[in-house]
Image 1 (cartoon, helix red, strand yellow):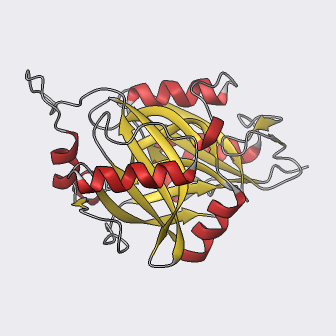
Image 2: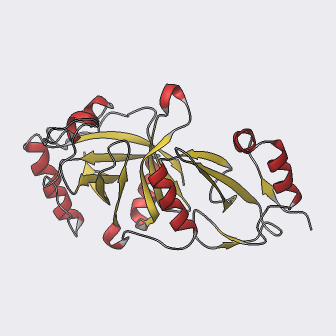
Image 3: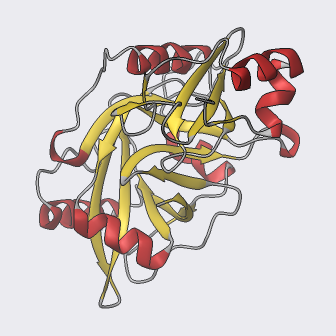
Length: 265
């Protein structure tokens, strides 16, 4: 039976025609796989399967996903993130998914971030939100100082200071939130010189979100991203407490935000 593999033009360009043809012929394709998106088993002989190429600084990893979860694509990541992807593909997950949050790595600062999902009420309507806070101060890459440049760095990327949560933040074009099979995978930022988007934050293991959060994301087709420096928001266990913490951070001038388009479903 022919294998039902999809190799996109961008993946073919990276791996070469010969390797792509061998994959399509079934020579190098897996007999079965764990989907790199939803982590459930897949079989390229019986269901459409996408090839997903993760490219790091020095190496690349070819993974497979159900076509209904992810299209065939090239994903640019750092070498450290690629090792995280390898661990995830191999079934060795790191981090935690409890209470809608997971620590992960940021790009380019490589600081540990806490990412929490929740619904935020603005102007009488619920919006899906991600709240990002590092676990330690972030200094500017190449700096030998000991300050915290997290907010200035984000402002330089287009995030705006938010004095109060009274209106939806402005859309930050070029950035997006990757949601696949109802799980949160990454926050993407524009690639260098207009190239392929790269992961600013990527979950080591797809992060579960609530049905309400996913429904709101599908309704608005965008996600609000709030960010504050270490100690400004905290790891709040409930959405009402999270909102209180966001309001306090905004009032203290320690909150930036943007609205990011939703990629995926």
